[in-house]
Length: 211
Image 1: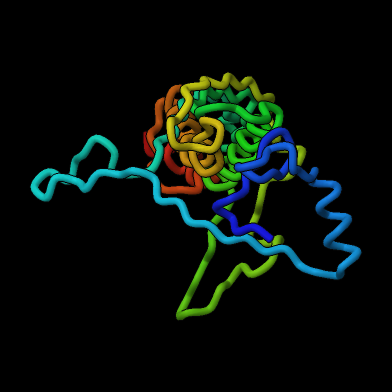
Image 2: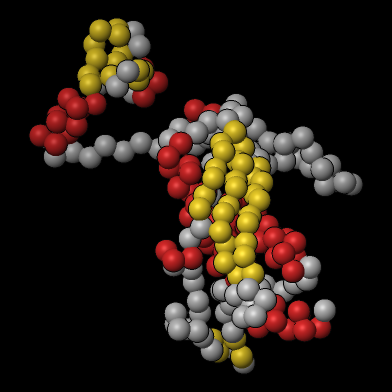
């Protein structure tokens, strides 16, 4: 019997630090646990280094665990007769630390971007006197596969010293960048600035009429 301080893990083997040859593979361990009908449990805590912000400025070198930066350029087509906006291409550059699984990272970017498209062009919860007036997908529109644009993504691997294997993470950053990028693209196309999301066809036609 050993406590956790006496054990090491390397190359999928668990071994005693004072006798590395006394080891057990993950598979062997799982088999023994199943045979004895026991349960393995492990708990751990990790507190990454952060700095307290300056009380006067609110600024600091590292007041958050890690910073993920995303930049997007989006190509849209605006029908000035109907006000309908079609998102054609999305170019994304993301500083995500180490991309442990690049395909999954790109999938996260694409999924987050589609959410951002919904935020920018479709999704709006209408509430009156505490009651949601559009509680279903008839009135609350979301993007479908037919609304999905072409994605061109570039990953910048700037590894984080405290992240798992140097990773920072990607998820919300892609969503956050999308709506303002679409709004800017619409402005570039029709020279009308709309600040109220979602940018619906009705708002575009109204803005064009008032232009």
